[in-house]
Every structure is written in C-alpha cells, then in structure tokens.
Image (tube, rainbow, N blue to C red; front, top):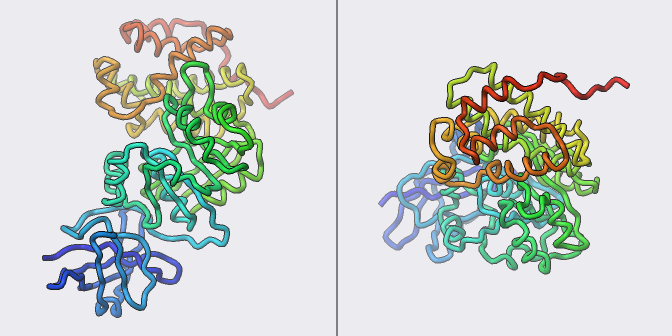
Length: 436
C-alpha cells in the first residue's frame, strides 16, 4: 500500500521537507524518498533538491495522535490523516523565525480568517483559529485544509484549530475577528469576559451592523473595556494571499504601537501592512465598496465595455468620499488602499462575492437566488439598505446607491434605472482639491 506523508522538517530555519512513504508490515511508515520543497507563487510547491540521508530513516506514524517522529531531525506539524493517495496542495510552508513571538487567535473559519491565520503561523507566532462549527473544525484539523472556503490550500502545520472559544483565546495578545457583521456583536459579547486587559482586538469585517448603523470598531468598544482596538482592511482576496501574490493591507488605529505590533505580526515576503489613524474612514471604505461591486457586476453581465466600468468605479469613489466626509471621516483616506484600492479590486473580479451577486442579477436572476448560489455572505446586499437610509437622512447625494437599491429591492428594470442615471444632473468631476 503506497501513500504520501506530508512531513515538515526544520532545515536551516525553514520548514521545507516533504516525504513520500510506504507502510510496512508492522504499521510503520518507511520513507522511500524525500526532498526539500519550496513555494513559488505562480505554480505552488516544487522540489528543489534531494535529501539523501532522509531516505534511509524510518518515519513512525501514530494514527491516534496524528503525530510522527523522525530520528536525528526536528520534526514539526502534523499529517492530515492516515496517508492515502497523493493529494495536491498549494500554500506557503516557509516558517519565519521570530524573536518576538506572540499568542494570536483568529475568530472565524472563512476564507480571509484562514488566510490571516496561515500568515501569522508562518511568521512563527503561537497561532490558533476558532470556528463555531465543531464538525468543520474537526474536519479542518484532520485534513489540514479548509475545504469549504479555501480548497486545495494546506494549513500551516503550526496552526491549531478549535471550536472551544475559551481554549482558543486563553492568554492571547492579539485577537483577529473575522466574523460576518450580523453575528459580530454576539461573538464579541461572548468573548469579552475571556480577554486579558490590554488585548489587541482587530476587526477584519467589512460591514455595518444592521440595527444601529454601528461599525465593527464601535461594537468592540461598546462590548469590551480596557482593550486596544484596530481594524484591518484593504484589497485582499484570501485566495490570492495564500497563493503568495504580492498583497498590501491597512491597519487602522489611534494606537500607534498597536499598528506597529500588527505590522510586525503580519508582514511577510509577499504581504505588506500600511498604517492609518483614520479608523472610521478605513472601516467605511471597506463597507461601502461592497455596494458598488454589485453594480459593476451587473454592468459586466450586460456586456458593457471598459468605459462603463471605469465610469462606475470613478463615480462610486466620489460617492464614497462624500459619504465618508459627512460621517466625520477624512475623505482623503478613500484614495488609499482601503478605499480606491479595495474598490478597484472588488469591482473588477469575479472573486468578489458582491460582484458575483450583481452579475447573476444582471443575468436575470432574483436577488434571493443569486445570494443562494454564491453560498457565502455578500455584505454589500445588507449594507445597501443602511447606506441609502443614512444618506437620505444626512442629505448626501448618492445616485448609484439609489440605483442599486431600486434594482435589488424595488425590482425596477435595469434599463430604466440606467436611463434615469444618465439623465441626472451633470456636476463637478472632482470635489476635493489640495490647493487652498
């Protein structure tokens, strides 16, 4: 019986070795051959050299504990399960050594939470990931893969996954909260008594609470006391992060040391973290851009050209800046990564859930059916009602928001809405200037 064991051995500070193994008569696994493996962003893992000495060692596999041992080598990580047919994985498996290791937990088992957890674990920190669903948590532990949200991506061998919230957060210095906005407050309220004073709470959720128009940082401050609060947002598709594509994001907090600490925890060869003190602006940008991805998805479904897409993205940015300023944020924040960067990404790719919802609606499907087909939370659908109501209360001119609302919730025909938009008042192009 042949099988594949994925074993990670520390070689000059990098976890790079993969073993091919064969099961013996006594239930042990003997290494047939081994090789050092390196991750390349465009093509995954490649073998780059043979490690001859490893091929003559015995690899002992214990099925109950999912652990193994290799003499004369420091082995880390765990196998996915009892080895079977070869399974294809992609993922960054390099381990960065750090002299300032922290205890970090990521709350949420979605694609972005998993990507963040993999980055932090790869940077040498004690990293846990909490998932509410105990069955899925167990499946991820066994397969070493989040098959539902990031299929084919190997979880870092040092990442611990748990469905026990108390166990996951115990003693943690940093808590990343990657929970949909609809259940964000409930999770934070449950979390609060378990935290030690001064814990860094970082929201990665790009949404607005439906009942009170509260952003996630406001919920964190309302439900906890004595904590350090920040938000993480930017043009970040989880799939591309774990594939090693060069990516940047923004950590926003009034606490400058928190920003530096999060930059240190997340920075890698392919992931950069910029800082901002405009928490409200960064959060609003992340929530607002989801709305406009829906309308660009509709435009793509209707085979409109790049002129149309450019028009929609640019005027979307104008609306976002007007709204942010009215809410007390710095409109200039919207020209950074969290604003225009995320807007361009979300409005031009079918990796965006909101874009895909708009595309399906543009193809004639109902909103409910489109959301059901996506199978994941599309925050823009929930946000559009809130933004339209708030904009009307404050008198902020947002014609694209009104148009999207009319299509999704009033069932107005798309051609009719487009004609109304194109016949609207023609105003100034740029409302802001650096000149006095």
